[in-house]
Image 1 (cartoon, helix red, strand yellow):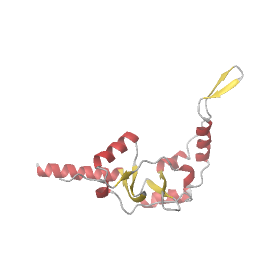
Image 2: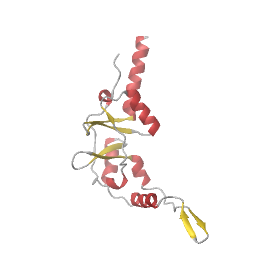
Image 3: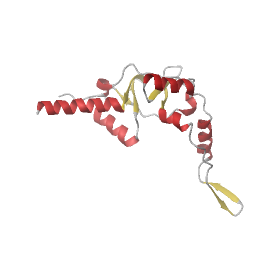
Image 4: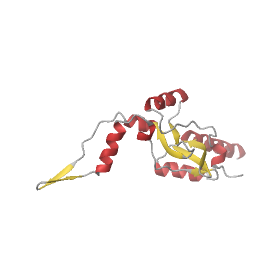
Length: 160
């Protein structure tokens, strides 16, 4: 039996947004399509990032003042200034580019279901863009993995 690959389980008609999509439009899209994450595509067609419902939820989290240590007359921040600025920008976000994840993990069409499951589990990723030649050709979500695994298990039980 041939090993299941990304090309076999990916959603080829992935819903996408642009960096300029507003967070309001994004929220409506998530509700209307009953999805929890989408790839963000730049104007040139390249993959810009990924945005999820968690990114939207993060907009409503409380603002945490960074912890500092005072030694003599100096205040030493326990978090980097860059992290602090990033958190402020996310809370004031109005477009997808302000909240999406730019450090993206992707797979190719040839990635095995086992590789995909390992990546999702180890990196706690719920949505994986599938690329071919640097271009988005599909997406794989947790539900896609679960469907494929249950079909594999059902065939094993049926053939036993």
